Length: 204
Image (tube, rainbow, N blue to C red; front, side):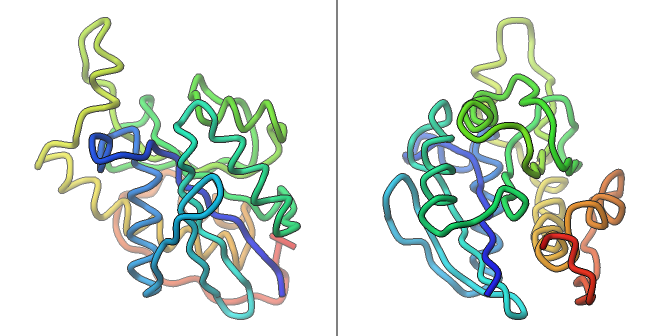
């Protein structure tokens, strides 16, 4: 059975619950709820297991704090013998407005501390989904912004984007990163149809 590791970046603790920096955790919470699975406290993170049409998915919310996210990612890749091409990391992104998301097959960390630590440990060659959190803060206010919670107005944009991200996860598993990028990037945040299984699974 093919295995995939889906990682949502964030910080553990009630004070960080559903803050902008925890957008990755929010996506995984929504996907776990959709699949009817619960997270267990395991080494380096909260982990849930599910499946999708013969593929096994490990959902990981690292508890290492953001700056050491790579420790959790590397450990679970090695533990389950999962290749980097079957890794998807979900993070927050200041450069994108709330309600938008962008998938890339590889690249730089873009100044994100969590992605930066992952890059140090496993390189740049893995898929990452950036969830927009906007950047409407005054000079010097970045930390308070990313550690703040979404406003009610922002949540009306964010919630359908999270729902779309759940569809994107399944497309990534079934169709691979290139087809999923073509389907989801630069699209408005509205629920997309569930991906159909194809014989040519690019994620293999």
